[in-house]
Image (tube, rainbow, N blue to C red; front, side, top):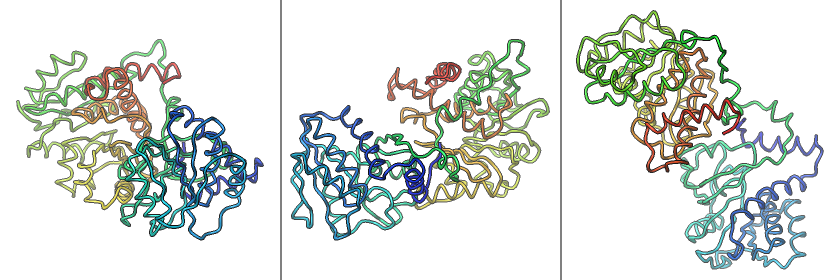
Length: 505
């Protein structure tokens, strides 16, 4: 699913109006109906609803929502922020429609017009929506601050007012509505993917208002939001006469004294993601633990008991993963350098492999175009340096992937996979319960397994991230986010894969 810039979203609206054809007021009505349906299903009718509108099209959405809620028995009041700018035609049309109902409608021209807001009220924010190019100031900023401090539940229409779609609010020290819920319209917005905006966006939902498919198909973008429909067709169906040799032989280089668990979890995830054969190269103490905990894996014992000092022959493996529990010993660093200089097959690097790499930045030139790096934010910062905001960090990640011709999986609340062309694939699965030790090791094992099976790097990274997150979601649904562990993510890979093969999530 494409993520479009604010300019292309406007073009999509205009194209739909011109080519469906449909009047802009009727397209607005579609949006309002979708939002209203969600509100009717989630709001308590006895609680008053206070709708704050600007005089643009976002305000028109708010007026239409006010009409729908009022017609369904809600106690609705409307407050229109008047800033002197001319009202849009669709806003005026919806205001005229609303006047036929007994809805209390008042203007706000100064802070003295701010209504008293009970904590037990609902607030619907329809002040500005998309298209802002500068931060809110004056009366607009005062009103947004007032709403944020009200203590009421806030629902924003399309995008929280004050938030930019394509740039960082943090960069200009701006203010925006801090919504508990955001009801938006396809395509999803880039700002929803940024951790810094979580406080503003809250729980977001996107509705299909029927933008013209021809425009959406042709629109160019480097940003995509990955859903099951996008990746399910990649899953390869297994034929009856295939054997383990057809599903790849993976090598996992992992573990050091005190960190056997990371190697075990990565190995188990690899085994349970469909690989034909797995060999784990590990120190002797870790190898013994592996043989007891991952019966399906073969073990290649390093000559040192506590950490990695050398590499096995690499010729027989279809893909290699390195990093989980690896440690930072100098001899381990030398082994990693040798791997980067001599191996040109599919490679996924995580955890301590990334930490070693960040301490030896001249090694970046050794990275082959068959490499996937999977850093969490701290590891990524060590690789490339600090960023002032999440939009800048995304640019750093794109530049890094482009410069070194690699794939980058930047882990987080919304994990993003970036390919060597600078295209960004934001993941739609996963939850905060996955923020637990070992979760990243499970992802490494999953991606490694897919690489060894012959999926290309982009497919292995994007599908691995999606399946990993889906398993986490299924685990959280059954066990709770608080209870679940990395082992549970591995266990729920089973229903995650089943949901693909049965065409359902």
